[in-house]
Amino acid sequence: MAAIPELHDPLSDGVVGLRLAAERDIPEVLIAYQDDPKLHLRLGEERPLSGAELGRRCEEAEAQRLAGRGLTLAVLRAGSDDCVGEIRLHGIEWMHARAELGMWLAPQVRGAGLAPRVLLLACRWLFSDARLQRLQLLTETVNEPMLAAAAAAGFIREGVLRAYTLERGARIDCVVLSLLPSDLAQ
Image (cartoon, rainbow, N blue to C red; front, side, top):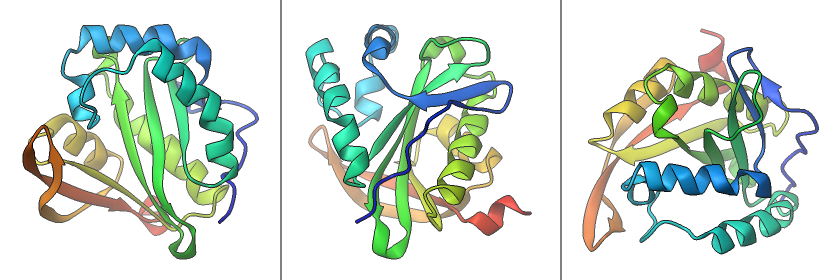
């Protein structure tokens, strides 16, 4: 198992930026949960995380990165250091050089075209620095904003995984989308 490369400086495309998620982001994350009462459900959580739970996640982040198990990056708007979302790397299989991404944006920045930019910025870095060869997203079939953002970023829809997850007592179908380094060259 390899460590996920350290992100020394924030990534930016001039419109959005990414940096390691930090304790200072907790207030913005809690506000996002408050502003979107269904956010935790889309993230597969039974309930919104508390400030203490978010703090523990931050405390464990460096160990997770060094062990090659996961990474959370804060999404920023250009010129600001305020967290307006997160993109998470998880489900990493180093032997196969593949991993899964998940992301969310705060309600006040949705619909502004940031999501495809965030996905591309993260994917380019993960392909080049982490040497991953496949990144995938899984999302509910009804999550049209995520499906549109992934398509705009170049992700290819591969199909539907029927009854793939158990959430809130029900089996949920998920769309699987993937991006390969060669997809960015097209």
